[in-house]
Amino acid sequence: MTDIVLRDVDDVLLERIRRVAARAGWELPVALVNLIEQGLHVHEGEGTMHLEGGEADALQAALHALQAVPDDPGFAMIGRADGQAAGAPQG
Image (cartoon, one colour):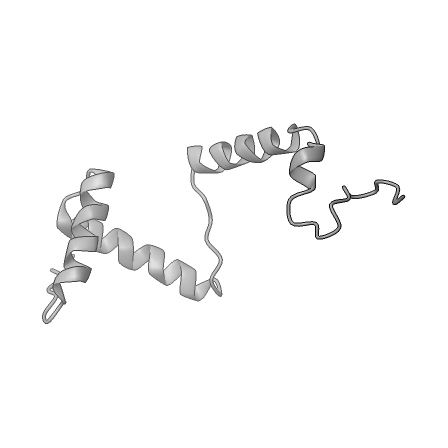
């Protein structure tokens, strides 16, 4: 494998890379390879990103939980200028 050398990288970008590496438990060279690969996937796939493993399961569970939230007439009135809930008879 070829060594990756970054020159003239600004401090903010370098710190962001270090944070990603630390959060993922990667050494810096591994983080760089992973970030480059993920960035290429995004650009080659026209901006689409695919979730891996437990990420997709967690998102699906969150969406399922949101679908189970019942309608709340109080919340539904937020932002309505006339003070009427959606579908409520006007009098």
